[in-house]
Image 1 (cartoon, rainbow, N blue to C red):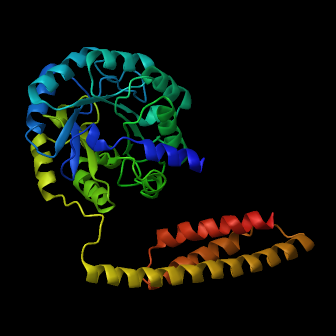
Image 2: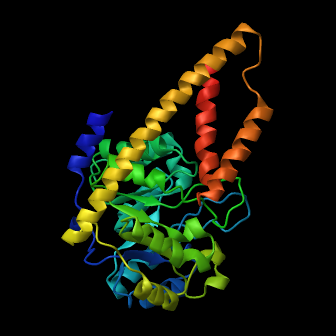
Image 3: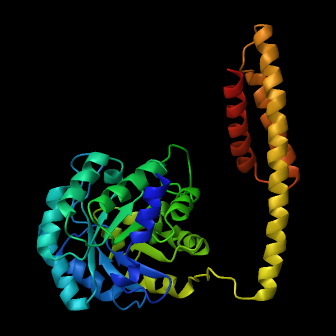
Length: 362
């Protein structure tokens, strides 16, 4: 598996070969849904004024959660995309969910395709799209699946690669969650970071609109992405967002987009200042030392866990002692708070430690 990913990474086309990304952040902008030719052209003309915008997006087919919701204009919108390109010069992109969508987009001259989160989760649908693209090496962007599973995301990218696609990119749009959050979709930044670690040459784009679900958070999430080294953004932009037929709350106006782009700051990946580099090197060495201590302490903890498990088995005591676990967790979170460490962070760590302890005692 590692060798396959290594080969894939080595053969990816550089994004500069299929999209003009001469500054960071660069942006793919446009409405969530194509609604009318006038709406498309007015939005496109305005976003084209922003030098960061490198492509125009619009959803023609919209997979919706429930029936009787607006599911897009479909094939009719392809002509509108052609007009957008002829009048603004921007490459165009839209979401495809079936092989038939691919065929229509190829015939109409759409420049870039993307696979949505609800499609990425289904390997059969991704394979169908990959087969429809076999022999046509056009750019394809793959959104993360709705559920937080890196292997599905990687699998979709691999299926396209095996069909001959080399102009590939990934879009991080967040993950569905049942828990209450200020975000519509949880960012779970560790997942796109791991994707980038495994495929460092794969262009990674952040979709702050879908992560936020709220236009007031789009700029903040965009800056978070840039701070993590993600240089591309996909931002839903609508000439009249409050009247949008889908995802109205998360779309911004072209004028707002211009302001956001002026305020965002992309950080450089390389550390140019020698003094700063030396300071960071010292701190990283100290972190490595502390990490090794953590590993040693965890190993010692598990030895005690194993001994407790042996005693429980000998004396017929249940493995899970829920009262003890709740008391322990509460105590750890309180101690962490005294040291300025977040409770949620400590809770997530010790939930993993506890799960491993239970597994070892079974």
